[in-house]
Length: 403
Image (tube, rainbow, N blue to C red; front, side, top):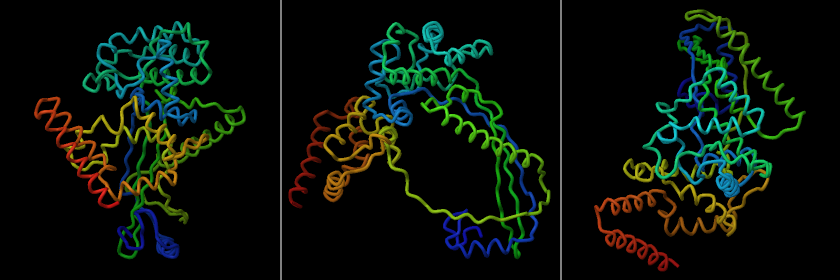
């Protein structure tokens, strides 16, 4: 059925009757394993927090807005608990990495959190390396003014007086930091391809299983959101059931061999609907703004805006705050989901129909390129400003004519 017009994608039929006919044609046939791959997969801890990443994380965990997150981390910085918050970097400099044991020792001595102390004790007992120099977490070329947000290992004389939410945000930063010293998470993975002959053709099906055999850094980065005892119990039971099912499936897959014939016991029909992309919330829109340049097709311009995006680490939260204040959009206080207002949609339509390139990050990229050329003295500042003013006048002249 591959590339059949009856399919809307490789795993779904447009009509239920076509799916039932396809199942009927396969009934009673035997399946043969044509490919079998067994592998071990390793997954390293994620990079450290920059401002955009921690804002997104705090929106998900605590349902707070990006400007609130910045305010909290700014306060932690002023209390000397974390490094400078307004940063786009997710890595450390070589100089900082060489002195990183100072941060760890400070956390060990001053941060009276039982769970965190347990993570540090395991690092010591298991003799995890603290040498980060040749890891992905250290890269001088990806740092401009400031490196990633990490705990300083200082300022604990101010910790007890902090509000509870600020203590929780601090712990999120600490655990992300500790995770980079832990070994990778390890998984056993099996992929199986089977074929079933059907009226001179062969239908191909795939199955796979993946089970975590060593938690590694995942032990540190487990969820830290608040929940009641009953909620924790339900979560635990659901997780155990899910893991048991995965383990059972993997054990079945382990017994299979290439070339083996299998008797098909059952085919199931599952009804599903396509759904539109999820709406942005106040956290992940920060990431979208940070990576806006990825939408540009021209490689030269895309490279120009790389690392810039819309706004800066320091201003993106304020941009969102202003759009809400002037009622271009609304943010649900409980879910942080963003929806445009009628006023916002109207403004968008006006700009789209009069100056559509103002909505395209390609324009920002071209301006960034011009500024870069000025900085490198490839063009005179007045030449760039002349072109910029000419562009603005031409757009407003057209807008006046249309109105």
